[in-house]
Amino acid sequence: MTMITPSAMAIATITVMLWIVWSDTIRAKRPAPILYAVRVALYLIVTGLLILNLVRYPRLYSSGARAVTIVAALTGLVGAVYFARRLVKR
Image (cartoon, rainbow, N blue to C red; front, side, top):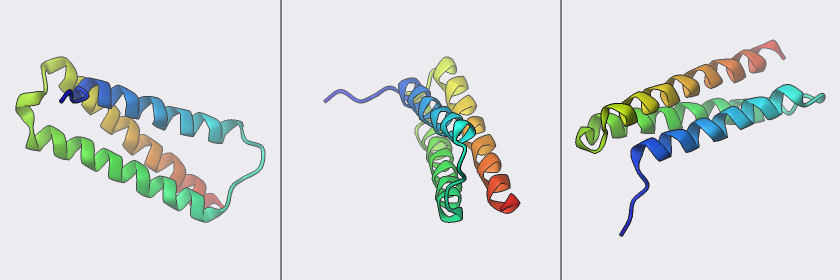
């Protein structure tokens, strides 16, 4: 059975997280506050899973995959802060 590589998983999460932030910035109407809370939770959960896998399975990560995963985790934290600030501004 073929698994997705850690670097591919990190690149996929970066793509999805940045797309969600981008789609929020171009939207004229603000969504419900619960949606922002769900987004913050999802970003933090995905970031936690990326870090957990990095710590739990270090042998699967090359230096490049480790760097991309760290960038993905930082993207998740920045995205969570972005949506948390949007939630508080309401």
